[in-house]
Image (tube, rainbow, N blue to C red; front, side, top):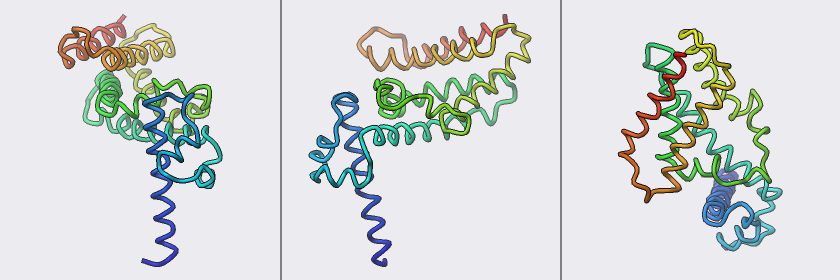
Length: 202
C-alpha cells in the first residue's frame, strides 16, 4: 500500500469515527446536545480535527441523514420487484418501509424521529434528484398506478400522505411504546396494511 493510499484510508477511517460518534450522541441525547466538542471528546481528538472533515454540526447531521436515506432507498427500490400487480407492488413498498424501521431502528430514528429539522431542512432531501425525492418518487408512482387500476377517486397526494402517516405510526408506536400490550407484530402490520389499502378501492 502506497503512502497516498494509506493516508486516504486513514482519512476515511477518521471520518467514519466522527459520524459514528455523532450518531451515538444524537440518538442518546438529541440533536440539541450534539456538538463538535462532544464528538471530539468521544473519539479523543481535538475539535479542530473535526473541523477538518466537517464545517459544522449541521453538515454532520446532513451526512447522517443522507447515509440513512441511501440505505432506505436501496430497500425501497428493490421491494416488490417480483409482484405482478400495482397494488401488490405498493404494498411491498409500504412493508419495506415498515421493516426498515424495525430492522434498522437507529437509521430510522435519525431520519424520522430525531427532531433535527432545526438543523437540516427536509426540503434539501426532497428535491426530485435528491435521495429523499427518489424514495418518494418510487412510492408515488406505485400509488398512482394502483389508484389508476382501481378507479379510486382519492387525490393522489392525500392518499400518499395518509399511507406514509400510517406506516410511520406503526413503526413509531411500537418503538416508543414497547411495553404496551400490542398484538403480535406481524399480525398487527398485516392488519394495518390490509385496512389501509382497502381504502384505495373506494
